[in-house]
Image (tube, rainbow, N blue to C red; front, side):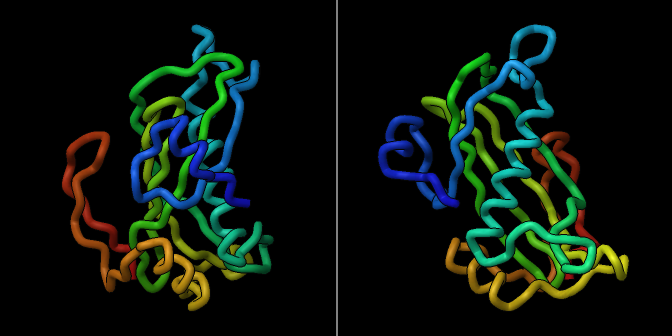
Length: 171
């Protein structure tokens, strides 16, 4: 369910271009030894946002018998730390899609940007152990969110390491 409202956008200074978001609150179990929200928590938040985003597009959580997303690549960069009890907004959007894969951007906000991430996902049938074409209805929903079709993913700069790379899985 999309929880992003104009009030949350204003309160957390969310940049333009984000149309889907969830709220969360940092729990005690989310903290590392320095009482900061652990890096793993951001990745869990991204996963929860991705699953809710796909459900909002009509593709709820999947089973081994139904195709769904698997992560090929995941990156996150951190701008500020968070602590126990901090309320945040996690945003998600699709930025491109191909025949069997798609790219998503994520961000965590608390009165400004806290962290930014991205992922390349493959639409995969677990039981058959193979990638499969994205459903047309999913592509239509991604287009409505501003994503563009790519017949192949162009080389891009890694956000973490500045390395040029191509994605042979995007088809």
